[in-house]
Length: 441
Ligand code: HAM
Image 1 (cartoon, rainbow, N blue to C red):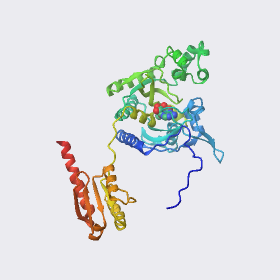
Image 2: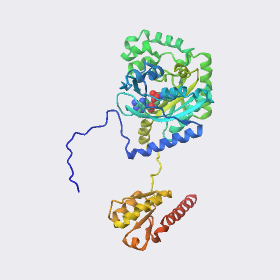
Image 3: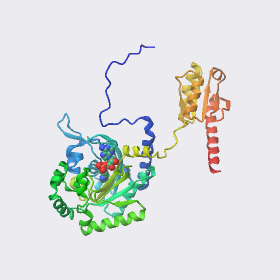
Image 4: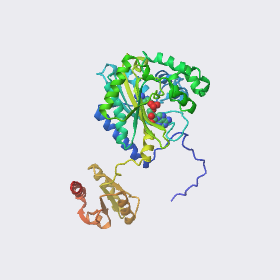
């Protein structure tokens, strides 16, 4: 054995706000990925990956220079070639860039895309808020019909429900270019006399982004927002008609929703329908697990032709935290079909081949070939929940046989090693049939 060196160097730690996703958490990730992929398949969405790094100008233009995500939280840098780049704070801008760049404008519309990807925001780390976090998101480009708004809202709602979460939709309409400028004037007018009572951020927002005054989390700003004019009371006829239809379709869909005039979203590209999927914390605070909205002007703003669009994204870590809180049901742990146990050096060599053969036939296997004691190996087989163990000892090597042990009742049989895989498959089939029959009784 080589001499073990004692630790002497300092340990380099995880970067603040980042998170390792350890093996014991992967069951949640796999479940969410599977649910998202199944929903995407059922609703006709295709998967897209865009790069983590994009031109800083993309986010400035798409998300908005005055938004917190861009002005305060973006990881930006100049690369060796002098290009101004940023880690994406969200994925819609990249998807829209790709849609325009790859001529998806000329495909039959709508184009329906989804992603499952890490995002980066240099936010203040706290519970449920990370600097690298994952989102799954769905985007529909090239469709204006309000029925799609309702379908997207219900898609976001039902995915979270299927994950065992009791969530609610908060929905609003923030109008469009036609009615919003007038509404903004009314809003600024309302705040004019109370400017000094606003938090420093909101005093700036009043100049550049007055809509955001409505969802500020500072108490005194929230108090003032209570009586502020509401977007829905200032919609033009077209926006009003659109929103009324969205709500009618939502009623059809049995989605639990609340009208909430404070849902204005933190990113600049939204028009008309905006929503958040929230859960209520014990203190009664709304915690956003996802959010989205229409962005009918974004493709045009990014250099394409006018194309209506809508989408949403949900935060995977926040969903998992909530699933843990409510002890959401998880799928059964993976169990190997067969555990291969050995005794002696020849048996270990033979086992290497046996494992390959089993894997080739799609039999799921497990082993601890570096362990030498048979007792320890069988204990491990038991712990892993293996259905059968294949045991190879000196005697079996000499005889050209192997022992098949049923791990449930301990019954062992000797079989020809050449027929081991077939024998295992036969028993697994019987096992499966017996299980199905038991369930149907
Ligand atoms: P967003 O509301 O900024 O929207 O983010 C969506 C979700 O990502 C949030 O509801 C939250 O669950 C999660 N999230 C955001 N920031 C963090 C963070 N620092 N740590 C953990 N989770 C976080 C968007 O990003 C839009 N692109 C959604 C969209 C798609 N709109 C149209 N299409």
